Length: 164
Image (cartoon, rainbow, N blue to C red; front, side, top):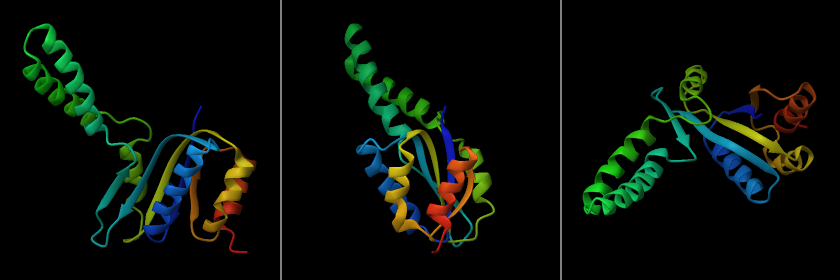
């Protein structure tokens, strides 16, 4: 079962820096993330989701491949690739895996303009090592929501929110 963690920041830069750091930790097998999204609210109040995975592009690539393969069977690979890419793009644009876009937009509606939040869906984590790596973000953000155990949430809050 995955755990949801939401951390808010007063600016956009810290959220992107934390996402980069978590991606580095994932490459080192310290954390296994199912989804990670940054939500920003610009000065005009517009909410934007910065997804780590582009589902539309993935759909185009996968649909194009399968369409071309099926098209080769029916002796028209170009038409098959075009139809497959179109269908893949449509299915990619309409799919929502991981964290609900509506939920993220709802949380971000209450943000002040210029702020951001990092939404992370975590499968597994080596807690002590990840918290150690997050020291540079201490005092920079606020933990808004988690589905962690009480002890794990308290440790995360201490690592992110404590200014001392």
